Length: 255
Image 1 (cartoon, rainbow, N blue to C red):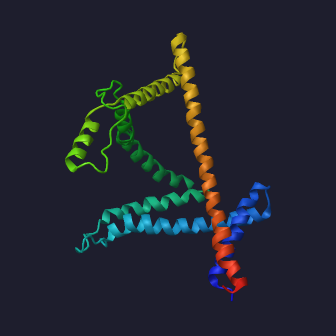
Image 2 (image 1 turned 45 degrees about the vertical axis):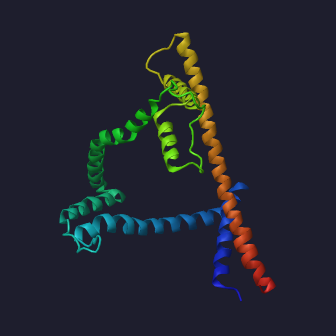
Image 3 (image 1 turned 135 degrees about the vertical axis):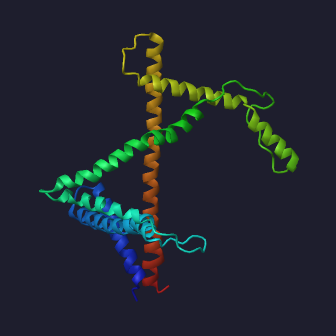
């Protein structure tokens, strides 16, 4: 007997073939599956918007229904109700006559967003700036690489080795830091577009920065390709193992 699980898996296989049929050429099968996927994604997005955003962070807080650690619900923040008119205004974008109303919440959001950018910039880039200040002079020569406590070491020896590794810079770390700083300064010099660079040293540095950027982009592209292959392998496992071997063959063999 054909079970519901087999029917569900078969539909998933057909949708998989439909999406991958775009590799051959544009076709109606792909378009049909694409529209089904977009419709499901739109429906799921609407439910997720209410369940994970509107209800949890707005409605429950407004009505005081949030209960934490077994305590009673906190008093409702009724001021959150003022956000409802702003949210409704955004939907006037579909009105040809009154679409100007939709610009009001956009202006409010842009104003709040602009005010938060200073803090957001510091939060995002300050740790990156701090991490770019790396030491390039080794402070310990007893090991070329950072020592790691062996599993057989006692607790006291492991603590001593760990502290020694944390407080010093070893030769391999210094070399890595030098390569990092050369890459950072070269790439930054490439983006000096405000004035004409005539110094031969700076020109060579910008050329090096361009090459290093290409290396980085190549690594990102290679990672993207491997991610696509990982998705393909996952879908082929679904088709050949979960559907073909574990479901279809069992139906025909009575297993």
